[in-house]
Image (cartoon, rainbow, N blue to C red; front, side, top):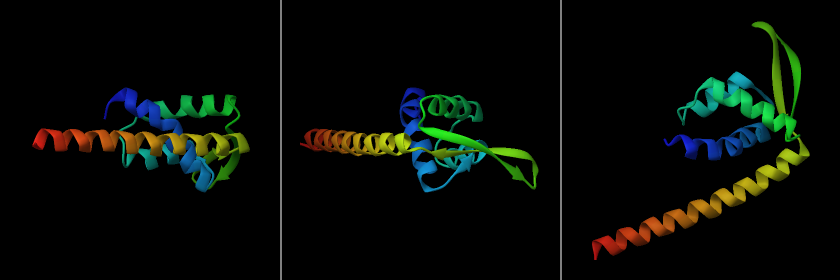
Amino acid sequence: MNTQLKKGVLDLLVLALLDSRDRYGFELVERISKRIDIAERTVYPLLKRLRDEEMVASYLQESNKGPPRKYYCLTDKGRTTLAGLKSEWFAMNAAVNQLLEEEERNDAE
């Protein structure tokens, strides 16, 4: 997948995953990379930016598998942003699909 396209949807994906429950960074990487090829180093700067923009908050939680883990959770601002991004995504997706389908029909004629 195109790098610029991935960058455009990573905010949406991270916020959506945090909407369902709090997660630690590597868990987000694992979840996203099952569907989209991303590097771990891509997600941590994104999480820092989202925290700086007050869309997510973080806290440490003890782990039985090593040092404490930093968990991220969605803030009210993050939920509002997520709702807007989802709306934009669905509208864009519908418009692109419609245009592609129209062009396929035109090519078939």
